[in-house]
Structures are given as C-alpha cells and as structure tokens.
Length: 237
Ligand SMILES: Nc1ncnc2c1ncn2[C@@H]1O[C@H](COP(=O)(O)OP(=O)(O)OP(=O)(O)O)[C@@H](O)[C@H]1O
Ligand SMILES: [Mg+2]
Image (cartoon, rainbow, N blue to C red; front, side):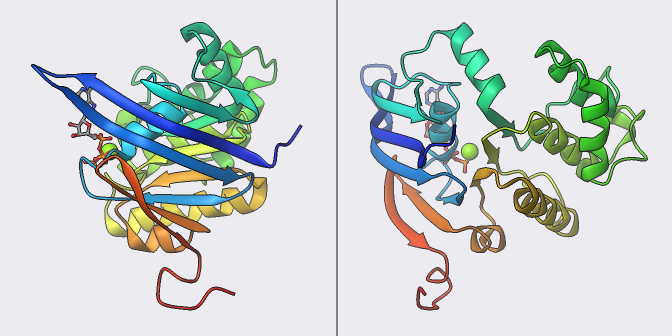
C-alpha cells in the first residue's frame, strides 16, 4: 500500500539532559513529505540535521511529538518493533560506510537480506552490486576497496531490500569531488529506476539542486523550504 505522505512529523522536540540545564536539539518541527519526493536537508554544523534523521529512522527517541512514516506511527515503538520497521521500510546510508570488515562486498549486502529471511539473498545482493557498478568487486573486502567503492557497497546494501525511503547523511562527505559526483549520479539513477523517496542531508549545493525540495535547518527548527527551480533563482513552474 502506498500512502500519500510518506513522512509526517508533528511538533517534534528532542532534548538532552545537560549539566544544570537541558539542551534543546530539535525545537518543534512540523514536516510533511509526499511519497516519491527527493528532499535535501541543509543547514550549518550543529543545527540538528543528523538528529532529525535519527528521529525519523528511530535511532533516537523524541522527547515530544508524533512521527508517522509510511503510514505507521513509530514514535511509540519499542526497540524490537523499531528494528523490524527499519528492516521493512527504510534504507540508511551514512557518511562513514559502516561495512563489516570481515565480510566481502557480496556478504555485506547479502547477509542482512538473509537475516531478513530472503532465500534469494545472494542473487539480490549480486544484482544490487552490479547496479552500482561493482560486479567486478563482489569478493573484495572493504579494506581492498576505495572510499567510493565502499560507499557504493553501502548504497547497494541500503537499496537491495527495496526500501520505501532512503535516508542518507552526507553520503559524499568522505569522498573526493569526482568520486562524490559519481555517487550522486548513482543515487539519482537508482531513484529514477526505483522511484524511492529520498531524504538526503548534505553540505553540497550541487546535490541539493537535484532534489525536489530543500529544507534549511537552523537551531533545531526548519528555517525555510525551497521548491525545485526556486533555489537557484529561477521561478517555480
Ligand atoms: N547525544 C547527544 N547528547 C547531547 N547533545 C547532542 C547529542 N547528539 C547531538 N547533540 C547536539 O545536538 C546538536 C545538533 O547535532 P547534529 O548532529 O544533529 O547536527 P548536524 O546539523 O548534523 O551537524 P553536522 O553538519 O556537523 O553534521 C549539536 O549541538 C550536538 O552537539
Ligand atoms: Mg550531521
């Protein structure tokens, strides 16, 4: 079943107990994202971008507010149900690749599928790695691959289960310009092929320009939202 709004956030607050005073990281975020959109999240360091992604992916519990992803309330799920929800709906790519060093590229992609009960895990994993141009690196270990190749394995792993939403936190942050560019092209070509909703945190204006909408985060709040075509001075259609 597809829902119209794949993400619905209502008055999201995230606070941490500090010494003497609490630290307010997210201070009342309301956000709706329609299914199929590509969203870029921009903002200064420390503004709350990764925190926002952590609450949307259930890696961090909100202090207040409601989160509905793919039609399901997730703010009140326990850890086990949250892990299942992530497995069934969400793909995550982080700046550091988080590959398992003792597993080959193929195993890094296939083992999570196998754990999810897919009998055809290795076939799906191989196809997913071919899709990201790594058909010739299936049996390589992370240490035997370049940064760009490792990030492509991480992307293959995130998209192999065909998630409804792909979250990426600075997916090109650890890559040089040219490699980053090819990873961006890869992400968008996968989107074209699969129609996945994408939420990308980035410092890269080039990447942001390719998205349908750009959210600017400042001090734990959404400061403004720009629709595609207006970000670079052009009028919206
Ligand atoms: N577990 C935590 N405990 C206390 N403060 C935290 C915690 N996690 C994050 N913060 C604080 O929350 C604020 C927002 O952090 P966050 O990582 O979301 O920023 P960001 O926008 O992703 O920044 P960057 O662009 O540098 O990655 C920062 O001031 C950070 O120090
Ligand atoms: Mg961050």
